[in-house]
Amino acid sequence: MKKSLKLFAILSIVIATVSCSGKSESDNPRTLNKKDQKIESVISQAVFQDLDGNEVRISDFKGKVVVVDFWETWCGPCLMVFPAMDSLRAEYGDDFEVVAVNLQNSDTPEDLQNFVNENEYDFNFVKDVNRIGEEIITMGIPFKLYYDKEGYLIKSELGTRGTEGDYQSTKTLILDNTATE
Image (cartoon, rainbow, N blue to C red; front, side, top):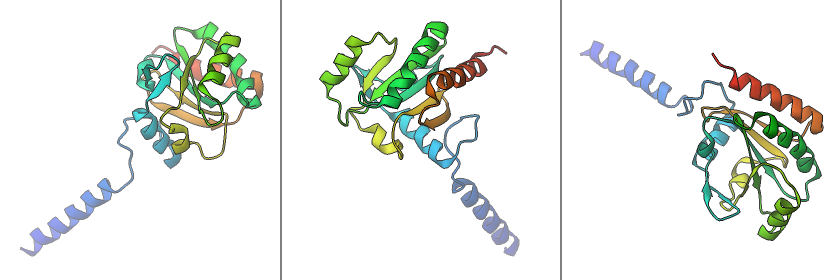
């Protein structure tokens, strides 16, 4: 009886340790820090809205490397990233998507529509109508999330490296995540 009780106690401790270990339910092959685990969890459930009012999810782009870029029209550093991402869209259109998430903090839907009409970026422009940015952005914008072709978060990134720096780092990420086995 004592051995059974001991075995039960040990088994209970092992089960409790495994279930409370904080391991993400994600099957992401990368080891993510707690912040990125939370981001991946939030974004996997997130619903954005395109300019026509349709729902958009990150899972809609599975099969491509995706940059989710949180921005607003007044943000100079945000806009500095756009030419680099547009060049990469032209180069890797079949393998790469940009989801430009306008936070709608100070931009109105009209501001966003005017920006899109005045600029010919080949992006998926969406509105953050469900305030997802508030859940995951802690420091400011530009705030970018990079996803692989399977839909797993690669990394999150605050700020910009400038047009050329963002171009080079994102190109490397695309090439690393589209290489054939």
